[in-house]
Amino acid sequence: MLSLFPFIIIAYFGGIVLSSRTRITASDQEGFSLMQFIKLVVVAANDLIRSGIQLLIHAAPSIELIQAFSSIHPCEQYLKQHRANVLLLDDALPGHLIPTQTIGALHERYPTLGIIVLSDHLSEHYVQRLIDHGASGFIYKEDRLEDSLVVGILTVADGHIFLSPQASALPYGRMMDGQLNRTDMEVLELIARGYTVQEISRRVGIVDRSVYRIRSKLRQYLGVRTNEQVVEAAVRRGLLRTNMLTPSD
Image (cartoon, rainbow, N blue to C red; front, side, top):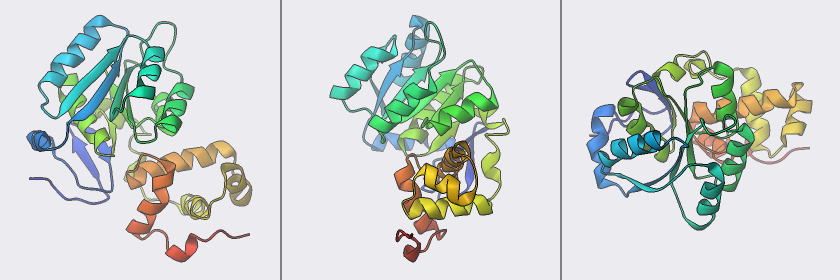
């Protein structure tokens, strides 16, 4: 049975899931077999990692690995022609980590695509920047992939944000334990009224970077993937009144 616990943080093997919708406990994975297949694309330079991911995914009846690539560029070309639900990116590509700009560009081009980063690099700043730029999940390679990978894919495909155990233990991962503060609420109201990041920063008296960070916090708090979904979710939760949605001077 699916568990219903609106607007709280749920633990998956010590990781966290942030959402405003129906929750799935780790023991409920078999229930996903009744759903439509989740179409997964994988990008990993290492052949062994791609093979290992394929073996783990093979045991999940609701996930279909539709394509795997060794670099990001052919993946981008593939996504122009094919629909995927989740993109799993191993950031250990030759040369450098996956640029956050790449994540941002993919998120902007495919806003419904859930992007999960698989990494052996664990830092609060790195995880924060990935989520800020549109990633929906982060899995640390030192966490047990057999515990985190399938659950993370199912979670992100269902519209939630997923952090594996050690990532969720970072201060940034624990950020959502608290409530929204006054500045967060001011930014939320201005987003609802249609103001740009630059306009919000001037009105609230904060720098643009802080507005971007608050937008990311709002997405996580409300359990949504895109900025466009923030307002709708906030109205459903009662954080915004409908008369606050009218643009003002």
